[in-house]
Length: 247
Image (tube, rainbow, N blue to C red):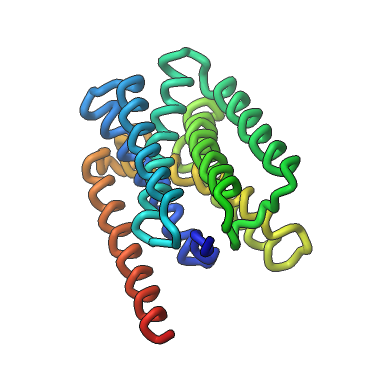
């Protein structure tokens, strides 16, 4: 089948951070601000994820709106899944993060043992695409737990956690340009790191000034981030259509 994922460029990472930050704020908007609760929110958002990912798997080619809708749904589902584990089940941020690390590592081990490439530039089989989306879901869930751990339990605070993760992302980008480390490995490292970066940035946007945030609230932050992501998706779709016409 045709390749169904976008090229990994700077724009890709900007959209990824916007989507994951929106996933943090929208997940909190549903579970906390609207007082739906973590358990019901997780059920709703996991259901949304299943609908979008099934649509993506059934599609025969790459559609920017559909692809980024799935990314967003994994972010929102990951937020509520992590909160349910850490808070409702009482596992705490550290234990929840450790469990999710083990789950994600197991997914990659199975992916590797099945003799399929980790390459994210050429997703052309159903099994590889399914593994790709499962890995994305749990990497976003892990990112939420890790971001919350850094912000609440490490003593760094929201801004400190964002600065730390931002520094690690910068080092990963430098490694991609100046070392021979596998670009695919660096992609997955960056993909995992951008989730806690989005989580901490979401906290910076929504939390009160007393807690180190900008006090935009979950509603205001979600509207702003949704607008930014929507404009970027339209831009990507326009360029894709333009190239198709030219071809």
